[in-house]
Image (tube, rainbow, N blue to C red; front, side, top):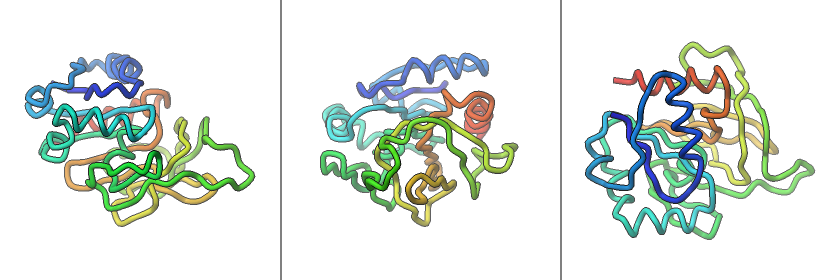
Length: 194
């Protein structure tokens, strides 16, 4: 069973539809027991870091997420909340990845980054079978700084972590559910992780 963590932070339906397209069913839940017993967990998100973390804490999901042993995939805000801290609302996050989430500096390019951009320097099973420098879909104003857990890099104003990996935790800043065949391949690769 695939559990999608519900925490009032958007894009759950598009993740469900993307999974259906690749022949996978999932349950959307904020029940820690169901999440803990799932084979795979997806932690999606669109929204503001501070209220999202508050929702997780109020339901004990912060402790549940960091204790998971099965493969976990964070998406967009989900990735950011897996880091140490976010400048968005000066938010203490889950601390799975040892990096900070920062607001893109104003440097002549539009913030948020919205649209297609390429990913490179793959070092994760999530990206097996992808062409070099594949394009995926982004919508975000904040980014995870490069760190030892960076699994994929993207350039927008500066180089940043567009994917992170540590143990059973995988995370992407972009939206695989909105990234066509490339995104479907990434989701399939995640589902196939043992």
